[in-house]
Image (cartoon, rainbow, N blue to C red; front, side, top):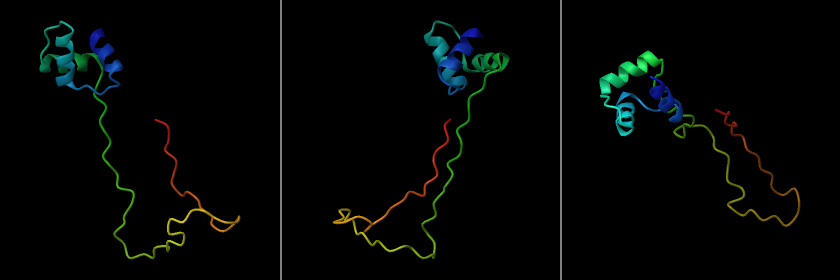
Length: 94
């Protein structure tokens, strides 16, 4: 079980019973998928589930869209001609 915990920590909880059994076999232990599942359960480790993709932008709407005033002409001949900003939400550290 210590080997199972070690692999679990090294792979950041991404190995399920199939990959865990394959890794244990590569390390010389004769462990099948179901035995690996039992060992993982006894060791108290489980695979970390991936989060479902969450759609955050809906471009299919009837709301007004701001006009493209710059038209990719980013060079300004004097200050305060064009301003820009970023409204995206910063990602939180995992």
